[in-house]
Image (cartoon, rainbow, N blue to C red; front, side):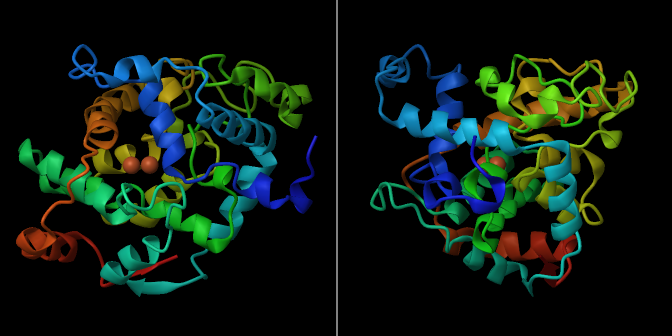
Length: 295
Ligand SMILES: [Fe+2]
Ligand SMILES: [Fe+2]
């Protein structure tokens, strides 16, 4: 077992880039619209892919260290917003300092992914606050720039403080999570009441919860659900935490489900023409968000 206070560089960053996690999600949940025609479908099934090992190692660390205590500690630290303050547009530049070393020629930067997501939402005529949710949804990845290990920034999120669903990717790695041996946390409901509502549930720490909290005073509730639960695949794809959700969560998860394909399937090697859309996004950001964002 590794020591949380003494992580090696490999334990901080098992993935060559954060995108490796998302590419793996895409293999698990391929786009239904292209699955029949895509040549890559067979590649998706290739279990010999060396990338699988880094993704496995990433989940091993994620599942070992994301405990109830760990989450509370990270929340107490980051939700004070005493790290940095910058205008929204500068924050995108800051986020873009996250560069991938895997394939610098073909990978688009973080801002291009955000823009492709928001543009796909806009093209389908959804409300402007959903477009803005698309634009902001991965802003929480700046956690990496504050020195957080990859597995505390990205990866599928899941409730902590109760039993881990076997529908979470690589469930066997939870065996070494200390919460799995702790009777306060290892029962079906753990510290929670049946159908208590997700508002009362702590999720594993990462970019989703951070960006949700950052935006919670500025965007309407469906947008906040999209931000907060966009990596909660064991629920929005597998429905394995219905026992914690209430009616209102189910209503709101219709929006989370609507959002997910825009995040997963909007990636395109051609960057959008930013100059053409700049005016629209400047107006959108100033309609909802304050001039500066706190981190
Ligand atoms: Fe994300
Ligand atoms: Fe994303």
